[in-house]
Amino acid sequence: MSGVRIDKWLWAARFFKTRSLATDAVSGGKIKLNGVQTKPARDVKIGDRLDIFNGETRWTVEIQALSEKRGPASEARQLYEETPDSVAAREAEQMRRKFEHEPAAQIHGRPTKRDRRQLGRLG
Image 1 (cartoon, rainbow, N blue to C red):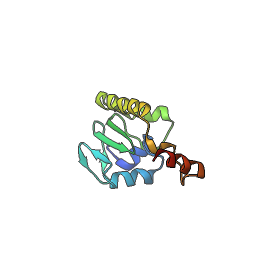
Image 2 (cartoon, helix red, strand yellow):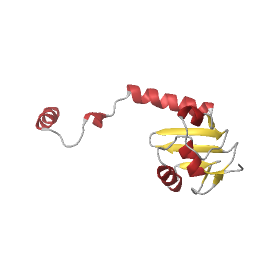
Image 3 (cartoon, one colour):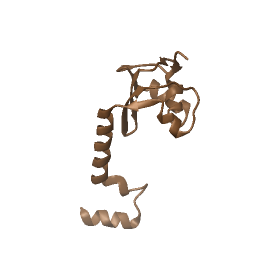
Image 4 (tube, helix red, strand yellow):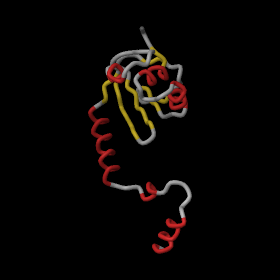
């Protein structure tokens, strides 16, 4: 196998739950192949470097193996190797999120009568 479509590889490596989500991410510029924005039909090869921005999480990985089929997570992990810089940045971001609480994280939907009273006491 000389190459695999980037959207298929991202799906097989379990970065995205569906192939259409992977295709949308590539089309939307959230995936960079060797530092350059690409299209979903572009083939990836062993040794290529991918920058993946998936929501709040960022990965920089080097492709170690190719696959068009989605398998177990243990097999998917063998398809790539994350760079040490990427691991350190991801862990730092995780620690930051652990200790810094988003003020609006507690609010789900419209405020209740009790929530409005509490907001009124603050302001």
